[in-house]
Every structure is written in structure tokens, then in C-alpha cells.
Image (cartoon, rainbow, N blue to C red):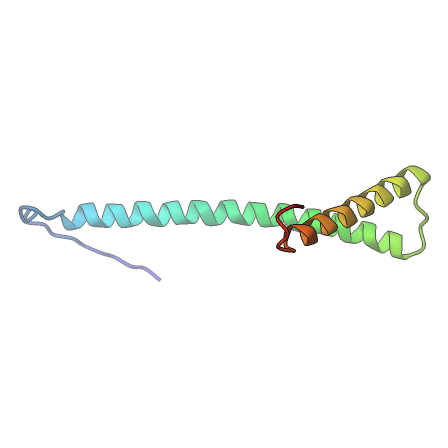
Length: 99
């Protein structure tokens, strides 16, 4: 589809921007939006790769793969930290200003 726009100006009305300047502003805004969309697309592709890697690891764990003692210790420490944080969050919301 071809779209041809011809703008004939006689000069801007005092106090108003010319039509050409407005069109340039619109095109610059569209380019800024396209740049942001492109950046988001790149980030989404990286996120897909990251999530796919996690999914692969979870599937490997679900298949009966045994964790090494070092990895299991790290998992246990993380679970303990999560439990401690959950308790602290619950205590912070109990209305008792002494805790």
C-alpha cells in the first residue's frame, strides 16, 4: 500500500506550529515508540531463554535427578530463609509495635 501525503504550506499562522513541524514531531514520536517496542522485544526474547533454562532444570529435577549435598544444603538454607522472612512479615503485620 502506498500512502502519499503532499503538504502545501503558505506559512504558519502566528502563534501556531506549521503543519510540517507537527508532522515531524509525530514521526519522531512514532520512531521513539518503535525504539521502545524493539527494546522490549529484545528483553522478552532474553526472558524466554531464561525461563526455558529454568523449565529445563525443573524437568530434570522432576525426572528423579538427585541433588548434590552442596546444592541440597543451599536449597535448605533458602527454604529456612523464606520461612524466617514469612514469620517476620507476619509479625510486622500483627499490630504489636513492640516487635
